[in-house]
Image (cartoon, rainbow over all chains, first blue to last red; front, top):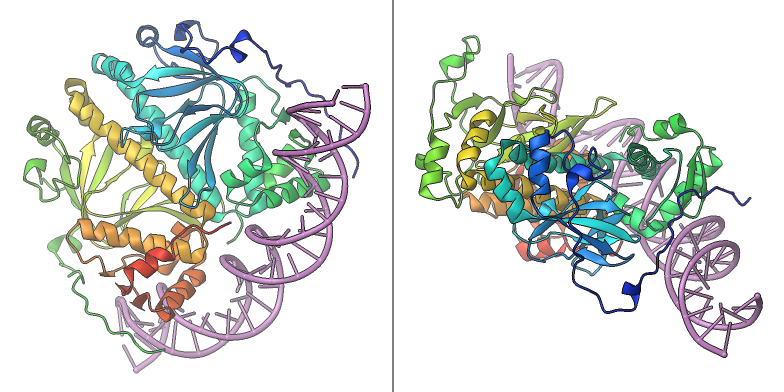
Length: 262
Length: 262
DNA sequence: CGTCTTTTTGAATACTGTCAATTTAAGTGG
DNA sequence: CCACTTAAATTGACAGTATTCAAAAAGACG
């Protein structure tokens, strides 16, 4: 097979800081505020009025660096904060009875994690950074207090949770009624759309997750993921080299996503 | 195959009322109150303090009868109310691009539907009664106003939504990593547990949904559902005759539910 | 009682998982 | 910088499971 050459405009540069040799320090004293954040439109404050954004700023978020492979929160941890991804990519996963890992989501800049924790007061999944990342920690007690004062804040929380419910419904459809090609094309189109919304190229990107993680998320084996990538390549829909993907035929890929007759 | 005879303690009696021949009347003037409802513990008020239950009573719920096959709300309808099932069974489903129906949930007495509507202000699924049923309609504007006054009410909504997220996560695990036998045993055990919580027999019950609906929900074909029922019968785990199920070996059925190695 | 729907069952096919080997990339230490 | 080790991805062969197509049986309903 010919070696596919792709530009790599999105390779992250690992910044080796002093932190790497010091023992892990306490959360950094960063006090980011939402009104100045470049993710304003995508993240929590999206669609909020000025007054409510100021209320968000008053919640004393803290920002935390997470290195590739490190955990943001762990399944079973007492619920204290929700987390917004500021940079990098994070996966959430559940540990199954037999010790295997089931990936339940991938989160990009501006997306919120940890909404499944409110039911039981403990996190229902584990969040792990797939690359060096930054997350904003949103203390729930503060958010909850703010919601008492402002209906805008109440609706914010409710809308975010409802959005998560709808997201999971989409995944259920995918897992319930699609074959391997449909699953992978839906996955690639979803990635493309979300990267596009963040100002990256929708047609050429670098996947931050392994074949095994994609497979777990999509409910197929890593071998099937790999084979399906190759099949798309042969069909001229994409160019793929390891984790680098270039979508050649966006419409064709969308066509592969039509639900099968079942 | 031998005909399995089962008692049917749960056959519903169709009450034919005058309503059946009159044109559909406006929602009945029932003003049920939560504090007197026998579903108090299972439903919205579960775990609430006296004051908050009184606030629920003040929300002016209305109760509505729904006949088998009728729709409670439809995908795309503007979101005005959430619904609690008071009696009967309701399914929620989504219409796929190719016209097929994908079942996303089954709801019993005390369970809440319509939480997926808050994100977009429109219902994301259609709720259809599987048998004659009664639902309580909970106007969201009233609930929202009550939440302004009471943190207890705020937490109620948030907890309910989080619970729905966790429910869907469980379904994702099922769809993502289980084979047909594991799916059906998980389904039967879930039905058993929920019927048990409502005071019905956990070991013998009447399914209100068709094989096709079960299959859609579990992500397999109706033929596979039927075959798997027969297989469980042969294995001595259950007795099954059409929609009547008696669980013979609860532990054995739970054993069939262990996640496969994948 | 006949019609329609639902359920069951069979046979053949297609798809995906499993096992195994190879290739490629990435990381480590001399 | 290179050899070595480890991990990730690809590919092939085969087996197993679920789907598809088809037909028959059992209920439901007017």
